[in-house]
Length: 121
Ligand SMILES: [Zn+2]
Image (cartoon, rainbow, N blue to C red; front, top):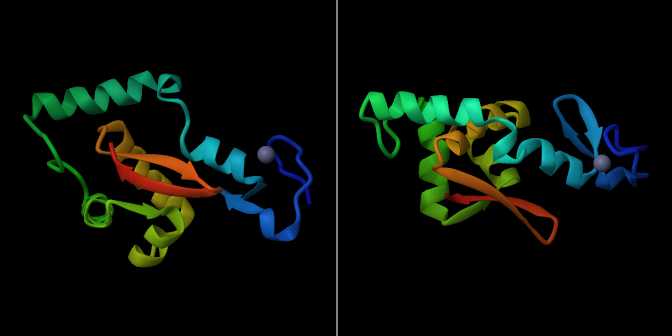
């Protein structure tokens, strides 16, 4: 098995499936946490809309986004795996919702000892 993005040779237990692709952990993390500069429009438009609407904190978030946010705040930090389990989300759904939270600068992801965690921004 090879990572579909960088071609790294992977053992079976090292494969991360993300958006239907088999990836090494690093590529998976990269895709989940693209550098903010790669999508400045999404970030600024989300922030601008929130500003216009006078939204701060979790205002304007969907139910699922609020749940993710509350869970992370409650735990201080929580692994991606645990978040998916706790809220019953697929990796794709979690990534979609998390992207919004990241754009609103509420939450961020980081990696420690090979595990992806979410924490407050
Ligand atoms: Zn890779």
